[in-house]
Image (tube, rainbow, N blue to C red; front, side, top):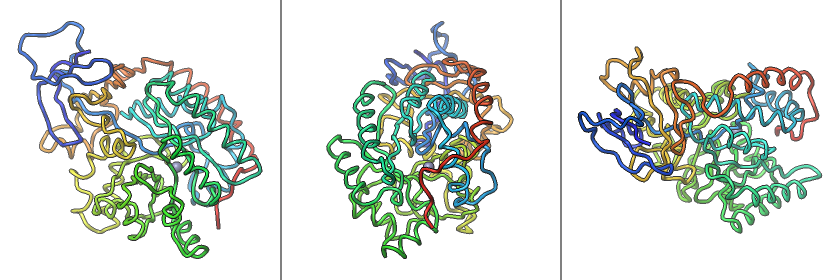
Length: 434
Ligand SMILES: [Zn+2]
């Protein structure tokens, strides 16, 4: 594949190259060369009038929760878990998770997200959906360490991991212990041993609220992040969803082992929270990616929105317009998340990188004038201007139309299924700690 005459905006390095051809072979960028006047391959994608960007990376999500969007609004985090979501999730069947994953992945692709780090259950349904739609993913099958059946469920996940480990070219797997409060010490020990034996990284939620952090301090005299460090969960490559209320000592631990933090500002803001983690983590040089969490808490799957709100939240909470600067936040759209996932060949437009790319229509009112293209990207780019989305060298969206699956059927299925999923509240599988 050749992308002809593109205006290349590499968000990883904030470099711009106008008038370049990008060649792709076997899913990777093989050449980036100035466009020759008069020479035009008839099979090339003509990118005249388009920016070419690396696809965005959503480093923490629960994609299937798209089917539960709007089911718990204007409630705090405690009620969201205990009164709504954990009761609704008990109603989900594998086909609901499958259609929810297709809906969520479609939403992400239209928003320019080419890679998602997903954390959920019923992995077979999710992997099937991701493969059909063509999104790249790192999937962590959620592990709970509470309840009667944890050993059997853990073994099931191990079997799933064995079966899917190298089966799908665009999908990698992580181990997904849910949180410190749902995974007691002995269970976590098993998870860490398995991670080391199988050479898998871990993806976990931690310190999502002051409530979680403070209840650990009261009960154990340690923060949940310090407990993860003791247990061996906190190590190089571990993906920490949120860590929104990490203390300075926690950040020191995270920086020392080179774990990554995924910031999901819209979810925090919808829960009425005001964390200052982004500027503090950036100041320490910690690897940071952006996430959306699930649609049921975040309301949408957009990494542009996470970046925008992340920058604005940081400036507001610090009362400082000079913090979370454009050159710090724009690289988080793709390269930051790729680094958190330990996949350095994602998230940039360079020779050898995986060909996950976006074409953005420059004939867009919000993108003119080009006084500062990076500011336009961070603060103005409408997702409707993302015309073409390429994953692994495959065009999955062309001229705003999904090429791989039928969007109308997905929307129809989710509209049909959602009402019964939220009509009754099932038995919650866990409870959010007091
Ligand atoms: Zn989450």
